[in-house]
Amino acid sequence: MEVIPAIDLLDGQCVRLYQGDYQRSEVFGENPVEMARRWEGEGATRLHLVDLDGAKQGKPANHSAIASIVKAVSIPVQVGGGLRDRAGIAQLLNLGVQRAIVGTIAVENPELVEELCQEFPDQIVVGIDARNGQVATRGWLETSQVSAIELAKKMEDIGAAAIIYTDIHRDGTLAGPNLEALRELSRAIALPIIASGGVSSLTDLLSLLALESQGVCGAIVGRALYTGDIDLAEAVRAVGQGRWQDVPPDSGFSTFA
Image (tube, rainbow, N blue to C red; front, side):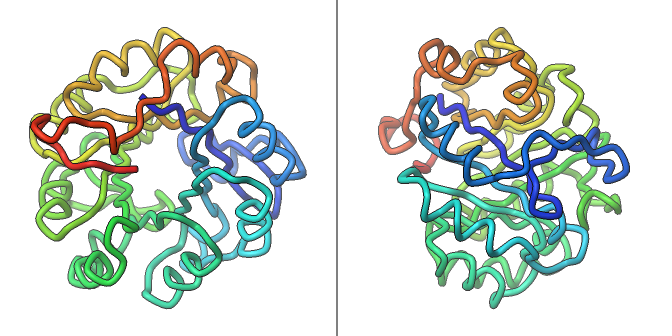
């Protein structure tokens, strides 16, 4: 299973929000590039960047920081936040970002997501951010009437590369991942699932590792890395860095690497 450090960008700084609340942000670093290099040096094989300004504004806002990070590291970078049209996504991928994460448009414009999946195969990942089982959109500021499982099934049908599932009530809280929701989601779809939200300890990562055979192939870790509750190098050694291209073809879910 892949342990994926999160770098959340707000006003050019590395921050963490509490349950997605922009008013409850905490700065953990003023140099995102330095942070990216640190995580790569400690064994990360992928970075997860979130453009929080972009998520709020509805268009990418941290291109400079993202481009600098992509140039500074040799590992793949995936980015989400404010990606709501083709131009913004194409621009991001042209920077060298490996995969673009869409969320709001998966709910509001699934036809566009289908077109993007066809144009950029294996590069479009759908972020499903759930609040009480319902999908939140527009930087988590709004909650839709669409269930997380319903959206995941639809995105699987139109060719998404993977699903990143975030339980908003767990995000930034160090309360542990929502294992039951992940199990339910893994039973509903055959796509690779990346867990996000609430991972607070090595024990949490080992709990997620137990779901790897069901399709939970990665875990995004944020606050716990910055507070020191999780040591990335130790986590990498403990759970391994399973690569999605190594998944056996008869395992029941697609590869994501």
